[in-house]
Image 1 (cartoon, one colour):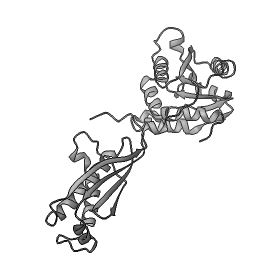
Image 2 (cartoon, rainbow, N blue to C red):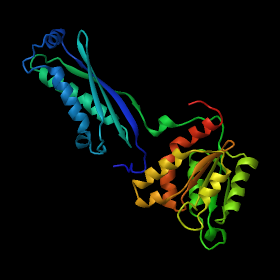
Image 3 (tube, rainbow, N blue to C red):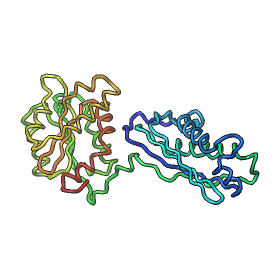
Image 4 (cartoon, rainbow, N blue to C red):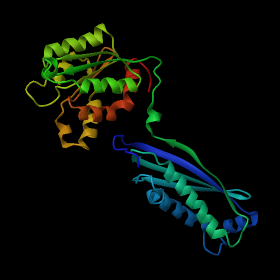
Length: 302
């Protein structure tokens, strides 16, 4: 199975369809509710719902998904029954296999209940109609290459007593996401130096995004959040709320981060923890929304 533990929960939806071709005379018996085994449509509806919920037991590499909704619709025409299944879930992976499994089992159930009356039946066109809610649905085309700066705040790294890993990690992740990382700088845990660097990045360099690492904890030298608030025009609390919420599901220590996020001019500033794990988890939580935020800051619509 693929590791999806780093993904965020989103509303995932999928629709699938299948067609059962049969004799018009058989279909008329369905309409008149004269099938010996009972109402095939209602039995197939229940079968589709059950199959969608049990997909991970049938398809080996499917993750167990907490399904929130399964809708089943039948459309009867002259010589066929069209089956559609819609599945919804608030989860980290898509539900297209649940929809496809549900519609397949619905068609098979219809076939089973009608086979004594019609040996010409054929199941056709099992297909995915749509899927929504994955990371690609939130991708943004900005029309420009966003420029970013990375600021590491650490006494030990600034004096050469420790190696910078978190800053280089941020740089790599932003580059993968299509950002141009214009600068990576290290400063000590000094509020005035941090403020000066943030102001330089926003006012002189005109960067779209500044990501800091370090100085967000409870230690006496941790002052990055204070420096950030002092230079920002507006705070964006939801960014850090999302990062902490995501991190807390993985370690209880995530609640100890005091990181802040805000806007100075047209520059978005985000504080991340100093640990590489904290950086990874925070970027996992935020990466889908960063470019959209930059678009809005520049006056773009939702």
